[in-house]
Structure formats: C-alpha cells, structure tokens
Length: 211
Image (cartoon, rainbow, N blue to C red; front, side, top):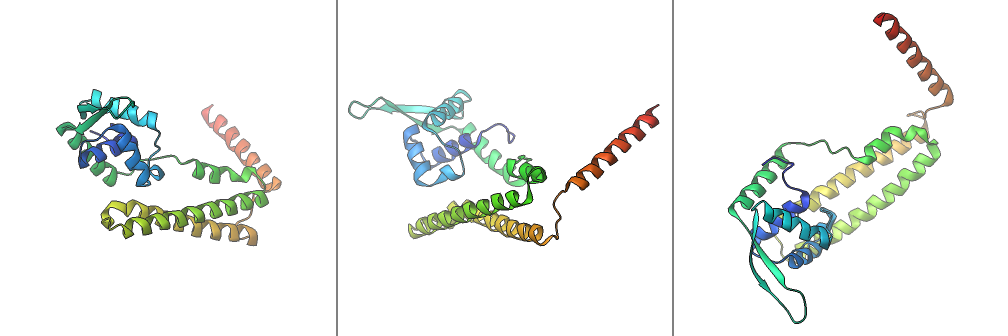
C-alpha cells in the first residue's frame, strides 16, 4: 500500500488495534488521553467512519458486541493480517519518503508583502507567542508521560514537534529583527512598479520571439 492508502486517522486506528481489540469509543478515549489529538484530527463521528472504511477493506474486523446498561451496543474490532501489513507499510513509506504537504503558513509568508511590514511583524510576533505556548503545553505532556513510565519510543513525536517549534520560533525572531533593521527591505510602491514594468517588458519580448 502507498502513502495515500490510509488516512492519518486510519493509521491511528490500526496502531491502536495492533495493541489489542477494542471498540471505537475506547479508541477515542485512548487517543485523547494520550494527547494524540495534537497529531491527528479526531472527532467521534469521523473515528467511527474510519473504522467502517477499514472494515470494508478487510483491514479490521468485528469480533463481538457488548452493552452496558441502557447504552447502545458497542462493537469490538481487531486488526487483521492485511491491516497489520498495511500499517507497517504505511509507517515505513511515510518515514522514508517526504511528501509535499503545501502548508498554508508558507504560502502566507510568500505573500505577506501584500500587507504592511508593521502588520506582518505584529502577526508574526503573535504567532511566536502561540508557538511558545504550544511548546510549553507539549513539554508538560512530555513530563507527564515520562512520569508515568511510558517508554520514550512512544512519545518521540512530541520531541520532534518541539524541535520544529523551536526552529520556527528562532527563524521568526531573526526574520522580524531583519525586517525591522532594514536588512530585509519591505516591498515599496516603487519596487512593485519596477517589477510590473519588468514583467511587461518580458511579456513583450516573448511575444516578439513567438512571432
């Protein structure tokens, strides 16, 4: 299976069932308690839908139902042999092969010359505050799981996320300092006019060559 065969939530479900049979609500509780909702977008409805899709592909199968009091029946699932292979293939390929993800933030950086420098710097400083708060929350989660005696291999993702955040914050602080000092000049009306003239001249030359 390729990297497009399973959704992130599908991978999370298969990984949970690789630990042992469980019903979807239990999966949801585990994912939330482990703070994996920071890695995978999780909603109860979407999780049940993901389980149904995996069952249709014979990657998981129902192994029984139970009922507690007046609650609806809960179906317990287990991973199949095909599901285990799909999970390991997906993890291996995703670890090895980078995939273009087209992040919106990079697009916004590329187009921020459309707003004033002061506004852009203010927005980026707000982002730095948010990312710093996120890092503090992740550090707290890291301390909690480490305190529970969870083997480090289970929360390496948190360490990676914190490293990425630290790199982004460092870059953002340097960039805002460079803009404020003038080392990176902001787009002026004169610069925009000059660029437009260059494009017009290039288009004119291209048309002449085509003729």
